[in-house]
Length: 135
Image 1 (cartoon, rainbow, N blue to C red):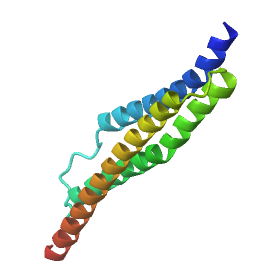
Image 2 (tube, one colour):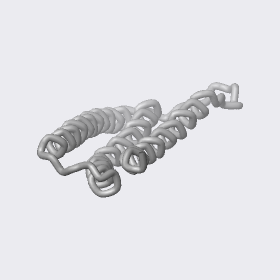
Image 3 (cartoon, rainbow, N blue to C red):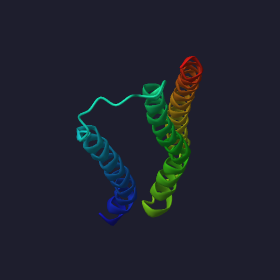
């Protein structure tokens, strides 16, 4: 019984921590989206303001994706080591390959997602510069 608890507890703690982090971010985004501006007058907008807002949102998404990309290998290494040393699971090639494969797949996915966000952000920045020059 102690062996199972020692095996499951560290992994569960990591996933619970990430779950709460993502819940906080999700509910914060929901709260931000519910806000309404108290100003009812039509104010003049500067050229490219909507693109600037989109660039800001993409920057936040990019930061989150880069953090996840950075933390993913650390997460999988800590899971593997905690299963081995705390849980007492034997070191097998199969378990090592599965952990490494899952780590590489998730890291590559997050890296590709980061690159697509960077590309989209750069395109929007160029559009913003063009709108400012035209305005």
